[in-house]
Image (cartoon, rainbow, N blue to C red; front, side, top):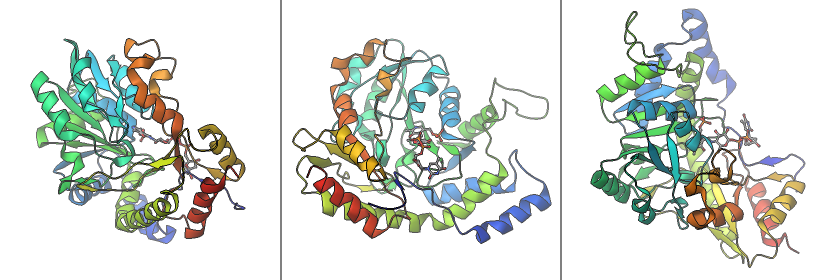
Length: 371
Ligand code: T4K
């Protein structure tokens, strides 16, 4: 189809010459990390861009998730989704917390709010839902359940950079929201992440925890970790932020072009955007149903052979991985919708540098792969 492989994503990079002045400043100041000037500037700039009050930067999203759970002193059992990247459940285990998997709603691929209450036990302390593909979870229902049972809610918002919901940032929901700025994300700092906090006091605790627990030179308040973002990452973030609207705009065009080309292909279904959402078009999942002429894996293999490297996000389910499959909540009957999605999904290439002719070729291939 193309001489060059087409991957599921290609990181957005600003023009190199625009980054040079930032590098010169770092070299001149010799301030490389530990809450330097670019770090401070990026925290302020992201708060403004995302429409949130307080945000703490991290070296990556996984350490941010682990720290978010520590910040709220979560323990015991936490309800979460099996249909995510493995870091979601791993962050619980790193805190000695037992993940309790609950099925997803097939319409959104997010935690099914109707199934959460049945999984609550006296040991449950929190819910860790994922805004999968950047699509908002049932935030009002989840909040209501959390209030009723006295649970905390931490959103894994790794996919949800810049997503709006009912007129405000989706990241304002829950007790904390965790972002990833990995190279493959809508907004990247090569590696990176953040915790969105509701108030200054919580942000301060997060800041202590990500810096070994240090409150000052001689006071260590907690068994913190080194989760700090460095000045190189922060400078890159400041530059990326200047380009991110344009990048999301292009993603939106790609999403629309795929939708138009694929909406009538028999056996292929698409997720639709929920009302009231301002999306970020982070992923473009398709679901290969039984009435498509080949299996999902055959289509996936044929695409690869033609140089189109989609990804099966998320297959296998987290609950099928060796360290989780023995849990009672990992049982097959408990996770039917998640299993079906995992067996049908392929995420198609979507990134700002993807050309119209490439999009059309991928869509045409899917429409005719069985012929
Ligand atoms: N929670 C959720 C829901 C997440 O999805 C993630 C991460 C996290 C938490 C944890 O956040 P971080 O700790 O990562 O900040 C990727 C990413 O590594 C991972 O960040 C992401 N989710 C996950 C969904 O996808 P892989 O193993 O699929 O990535 P990889 O290296 O195969 O990259 C995919 C394609 O992207 C490659 O085929 C080519 C392209 N690529 C990738 C990289 C890294 C590039 O062109 N350049 C690059 O530098 O996990």
